[in-house]
Image (cartoon, rainbow, N blue to C red; front, side):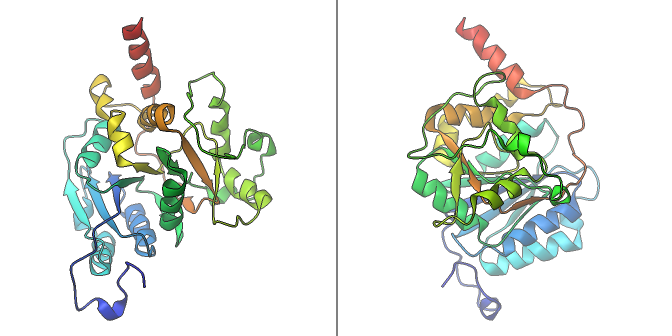
Length: 292
């Protein structure tokens, strides 16, 4: 018995189960990719979850796209209580994530980008790991499968399992741990997972610098560390907002990446082409000045 309603139950429409996870998706101008992302969620069995999509598109909003609407209807009959809201004007991705977080109430929140497909069972593995490890967040770094034949052993070198409990750690640019960012390039994790082999419990936790696009937080931990409220200190055109939030949570509660990663990057063009302002540089430089 799973929390996902089968086709035999679609006509009954009982009250949906209380969500254990709120899946939070911000989108802008990506209807095809969003439909694929929602299709991946529709393949998840457990735990019970709710889907909240916030659309900032200028033209062709998600609400007008037949494929997106079809997948939202599938999620509705499955018991996932999807919501599609408009959030304008655009004030930057950190503000958009802050808005999504404000609409959540489940104990765990999955920030999932609108160009990431999840294999069946990925959500269960994420939740099992978060519960078992007791840390601030876990994540699956999306893999670009067009790079599957591009092996980069030199970028695998920082890989290190978490043996024993996950502990808090401080990560900053140029300091120990920062070099782990190379693990998430191209299809590196697919190659590392092949070397590690099939884990008995279904996943292996490893040390990270940060994770983009598919991150499951303990909501209480993220909120306690300030969430994405720092958006007010940034211009609308910025990147790296997830790094700021994650480094704060990691420093207090610890975090882990998971192997194998069941997340696939659709390799669509970025919707944030202007990356001149890197949020960690701005936010942590300001904090350092205030501390000094």
